[in-house]
Amino acid sequence: MKIAIGNDHAGTNYKVSIVTYLESLGHEVVNCGTNSNDSVDYPDFARLVSKKVNDAEVDLGILLCGTGNGVAMTANKYSKVRAGLAWSKEIAAIIKQHNNANILVIPARFTAEAQVLEMVEIYLNTDFEGGRHQRRVDKISC
Ligand code: RB5
Image (cartoon, rainbow, N blue to C red; front, side, top):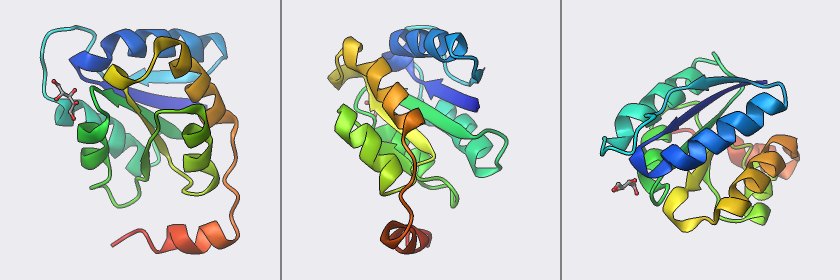
C-alpha cells in the first residue's frame, strides 16, 4: 500500500518507528511530517497528508500529534477524509470496521510506544464491515 504519514514535533519519534515498520512490510511510505523535535504547527503537516488522502494519491494516511486532536480536527475538514483517533488496539480496529477511517490518528503523548506499532498493524489489517456501517458512513459528509 501507499501510505502518507505526518506529524508535529510531539510525534516525530513514533513516526520514525512507524516508517521503519511499514517499509519493512513492503509498504511505500510518503513522509509528510517534521523530522525534528523542534516545535512546529501541526496543521501544516496534517494538511499535507489529508490532501493526499482526499485526492486518492495514497491509499491511507497516519497522523500523529500530542493528543491527536489537532491533526484530527484539521484532517476531518477534508470532505473525503475520515480521520479516526485511536488510543487502543480495539479502537484502531473499530475505526476501520465501523467508520472506514482512511486516516489513523495517534495521540503520541498518550500512547505507550509498545502499543503504537500494534495499533498500526491492526488498523492496516482490519477491513470495513460495510452493511449498516456503510449507511452511517454515507451520512458523515456535510
Ligand atoms: C503541541 O504542543 C500540541 O499542541 C500538539 O501536538 C497537539 O496535541 C495538538 O492537538
